[in-house]
Image (cartoon, rainbow, N blue to C red; front, side, top):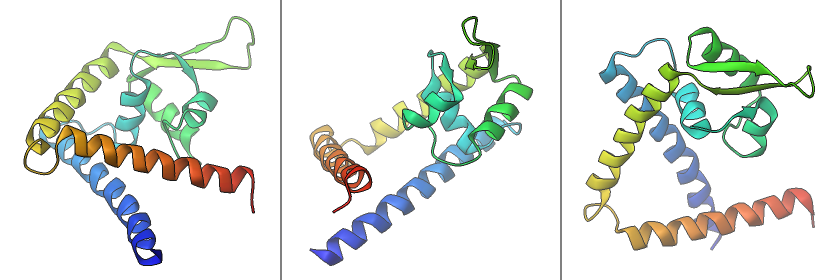
Length: 150
């Protein structure tokens, strides 16, 4: 079991890096040079929501210590609109600009192409559903270790 567990943790990390490579290749194909793959995932995860920077991290939409930097760059490059809260002037909310919405629509097309190509060649929808259930259970387990250490 230990060997399978270690392999799983390594695969999760490698798959994430490889997926970032897929996003980068799509940005290159589209000729988009003013945004990186991580920033693109931030946009895709925000989608039509309006969030604070803290909510990006809390919802698991972004993992990393430099979320504020990436949000700043996305605002500077016209992908995000940033607005001060009317209730708390210290808090700002972000949402996608028309440019951000356009890019996320193209990334959504990439996801649709990928899903279509995967089906039947790599995994069925049912197999992916089972994988996702296992990964979510693993996430809950790890979260419990962090919240309630043994």
